[in-house]
View (spheres, one colour):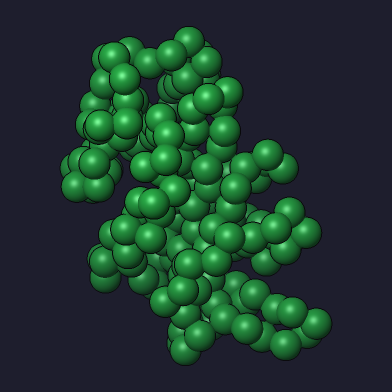
Length: 157
């Protein structure tokens, strides 16, 4: 599998991927978007990344990093349903380590995924910088129980 960062004009296929598997997700121009692809994927439901009409590979997972001032939020992490439970999410997080370790990174994790993110250096925090805290409050109102987590070691208290 290969991690690829997409330029803004290369996001059409990943938008389809999100629309199919996470319809509430909204990609923002200011976000960095990456995909984990596998050339020999066999699922008929995979969204293909194409270049000039030629299939290059199929999206297996994706994630976005949204800058919030001097901080960042890891958001929209999505593993294709056919690949869940096979360690793909861990592969994606491992591939993102060099990027998220560069700064103060937060995540608004679904409660049942707290242990998953803890394995990748995130820990539950009680407070965050104002911009992050305000956004977290907004997302909490969407119904799902979320946990505010920060990347251990990068978050200064």
